[in-house]
Length: 323
Image (cartoon, rainbow, N blue to C red; front, side, top):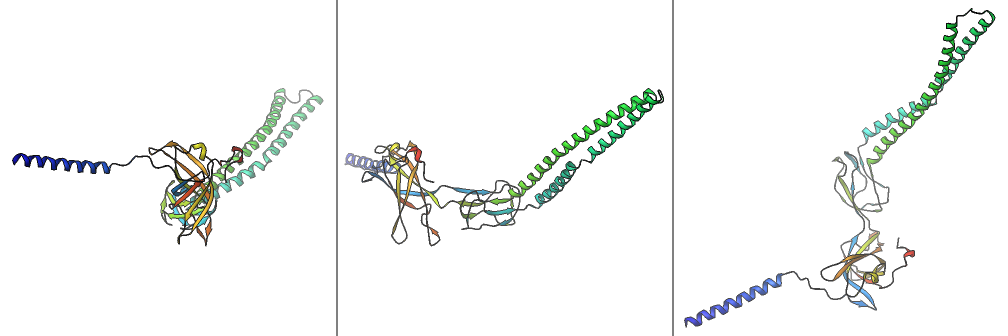
């Protein structure tokens, strides 16, 4: 009886270990290859594709200062160059005013040739004095000493050199105009960099800062996303379709709308990953033009979609891509 009890216990322990082992195996992640993509008339159909953004930008501050105004609020639709926010520019405005005054003074000095005219007139006087002395000595030799004549000659030559000096100074003054103009441009650039503009057409979906807060260069102020053109990502079975089959191919994107209706959008494959995943599939995405209905976008990032790829319909290289 004792042996039978021991044998039964060992049998129960073996069964329990088998159950535990089965449970552990069941909890391991599956790396088995997924089934081949379904086809429709020779085309590959990808289900459970994900709609995602192409352009998702954190708009930063470029200069340190107080954020004086948020122009574009959440849900605002903007175009490239539209003003989004303003950082305090009072110091930059003062520097701009000073640079404008210095530029005006530099221009006035560069355009003023009075020093040249004065040097020319002085040289004429020196020439006349030297000529008169020579004339006197011709009529009455040795009336004026030779040293005096030499002094007057050198004085006349010096005054002619002063004409060249005045002309050179005017040229330098002209270069100073360029320097002051560059300083004014720098001040203007500082002011412009305190105005945060939209780099793309898009929609403001999140504000990170409020008016009155201090920002540093690089601090994100808001999030701007592009909604008029989106990306649809899916995975293609590498065993059945090569990258050549799908690269640049035309696609139809189908999405289910609230209420059960479906909408289709045309696009083309713009990316084929060179990497085949462990399950034997590789990632592709297509880009499609979004549309609005009742002032709302039909395609929304994060939703799923079905993508039908028309295999072998890639455009010739000379035809280019969709805009």
